[in-house]
Length: 416
Image (cartoon, one colour):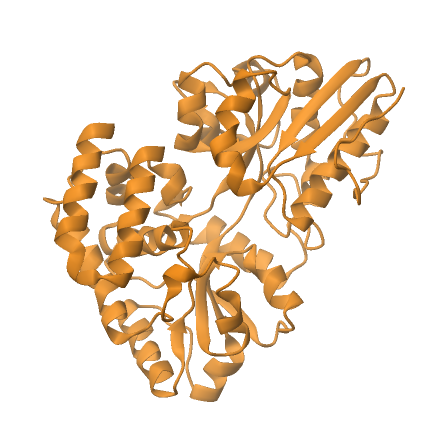
């Protein structure tokens, strides 16, 4: 049968010996719409589609890769008009609008009947209203990536506390460099800073209560304490200038050239640093330092696959979800030469890579406060949009804090 791969050039074909599921007689067409548009993720999804197609001679697999940023505004239309069978999205609260709208298929039976073994630790991120609405396929740590060679030059060590972080920053500034690069043009990177400063200042439970709309942005003293800690860094001049004009990728050269020494970012930054010419001897990673006496909470965004409620080939879609979460496929696609992230199946193997291993140890041993998804995934979409606009504004105009908090509180009362 003809196999059609829309925009499938350069597919990374995985071994067909992997994960033979119970769905041996699949037929028809399986349509996958994916936002894995960056080069490495694109190769992975195209490889998965090619491999799954080869495993099922009577099935034609089509994969359509769309721009990751554009997908955030296109997904609803895609799910309502000629819906594909399988799509990419995000775990936790970000599933909410599509679950409540009846656009995601309930696959609770797959979680309960043993089709998805090894995923117990991530089941909660896929659960809403006591049911499961998809599967995860990868997750990754956030933390502070830094120029180890510059730290060595300045006699700095990895800080364990915020006081040590600030002391390091002052020495970095004194050397003529900035402490942190960041590009806030698309807002979400400022959300990462707020997540960590709030989790460290007030604890994970406070942060999640704020995300659920249970705390006032204007009345809660903890919220103001978080911004006060953030302002210490802003007033020092810790961040690069004009960061609101850069994307996160456009902010990379400041780190690569040594003009800024650290980047609070997800582990997906590592391939970019290596491709820019930095060696592993020049870069390292540490957990965001402690501020208050709270168990350490961490951001570990989880990317997911879902079946559209209007899918035409749900049998094949279910088989694909089982296939992609199997230990063998999880090990392969999350390896250092694949996505370079962490596998979600407890029976998979973490890639032989310094940063993957550090992330795995941190998340499995020192994230006792809890695992968050990320600002724009944990907060409802409208709250996240207004929130990140305010966070970026605060980084540029910290004196506007009262006005910013008033807007966030107005939005909170409207959204929740």
